[in-house]
Image 1 (cartoon, protein in one colour):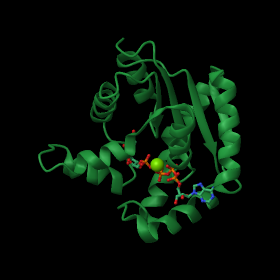
Image 2 (cartoon, rainbow, N blue to C red):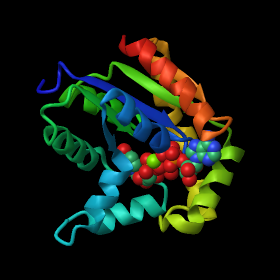
Image 3 (spheres, rainbow, N blue to C red):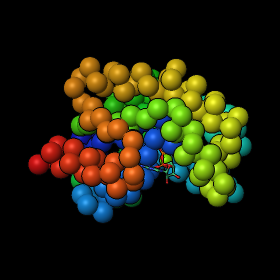
Image 4 (cartoon, helix red, strand yellow):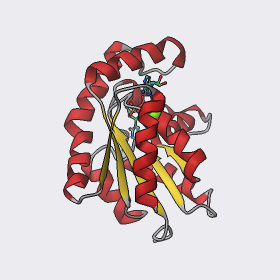
Length: 193
Ligand code: UP5
Ligand code: MG
């Protein structure tokens, strides 16, 4: 295990629940490297020489989960780009139980899961608002509904599974960005100390 000694935290929660927003702040306060699986897939999709461009574009627009061989490869490469770092936030991954096992078998185990609990109505409102300027191909009502379905059927069970192992720190997404981050910061500092 090349990454066996690293502190890896999965950042999970539904589409638009605040994973990216809070991860960026944790980078500044705790020296994490932040790897968003969605961002890595979108970057790969844009590379002219990528053999996966069209496949990734299709899966993202349809709110489906890209085959994990691709995503794990991108995450592993991104981790290897930061050999000096001991702390990684893996944002938006794993999205189903098979992916969780594949990552833990081939990269390393996560020490904790940071879970943003958020009602669908709030996520919908935030995503539609972001869609006015984000340029993301999946920030439209049709794609958002599909993302919600995939989250409920495939991704939420991952959180439930880690909860059974006592690994989940839950943060409510209600309140302002600052309110939510205050709670996030507290839970993370309790864990890291
Ligand atoms: N916002 C945040 N917090 C707020 C607050 N407290 N009050 C008011 N507004 C708040 O936040 C979303 C929006 O809400 C932003 O505008 C923010 O300012 C505002 P953000 O922090 O971006 O939420 P996040 O949870 O990161 O939302 P995101 O849309 O990124 O989540 P998804 O899980 O849907 O997207 P991701 O990029 O992870 O994945 C996209 C797609 O890639 C997936 O659907 C899937 O097709 C594919 N994918 C895979 O196949 N495999 C993977 O492993 C990962 C992705
Ligand atoms: Mg995000």
